[in-house]
Image: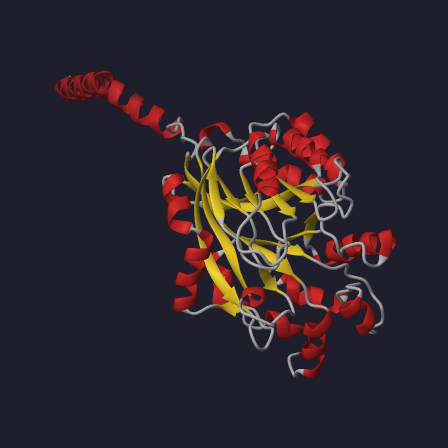
Length: 402
């Protein structure tokens, strides 16, 4: 009996100990349960990740005047060890890598004539042709060419169509028509890169459409072209690059002033003209820049300083309504338009009804020269200062608030 009592006491003590442990454990679970639950909840439901926001959108472009690698330039290039690279061989002196796009006026058809040039046609009756084997090198510099001028039909309508095919084959965009009365085909969407910076440090590049419009007015006043600009400006930021003006003059005339003012009134962002073969003055009108002639950027004339120099216009732009713009959707339109005509692309853009970017522009210029050897390059510091005087640059920039 004594042994039984001893075992019973041990069993009771053990049960009491187990009970005590159970009570303490339950109390601990009750006490710490909220904290354990919160930790578990935090592990299972991560905090919502915020989408990166656009911090800034910018780009830098260069616009150039009359461009041409035929006639005497072609003769010198073929005789040079550089060959088709000859006329482009010093363009890097302008800092090509600083710009996301170059746009210039191409003043000749680009057709395959087997490399045979008729000097009498080219020099006496001004019937031009630019060989297409220069195009791969041109593509390294030029993003788009203006074709609306008085020489792109020099090989006939079929030569103009071939020019468009040749440019498209190497990936150079184009706009404009040789027919100055053609109000429907003087504008086209041109897709240029924009740099989009996000607040998380990520930087993306998107292609965005601009309306680019020519106005070939060598043989008449292209009033229909202004209406085409008006249609485009209602949908896209639109830039006018007319080809007209009195040749070999240092200042603009009243006809061009009235017409270029009408283009600004129609809604274009700026007017950057060529054709006179001399650089002419600039003007600020309604808060917009007008350059009456950028001069000969790449041409074979070298008889005097005026015909062998130009003013390339640079623009730094920033988007002022970035939060409203769907840049990815615009970029998708670029890919969709790759196989479409200009008109079909513009209609697609119209139907998309996307909010277009609004831009703030800051302008500059670079004086160039191709004197002596017909190779375009950056001009000297003294020539840069001379060009500022010709352009009336300080007064125009002051009027634009720059």
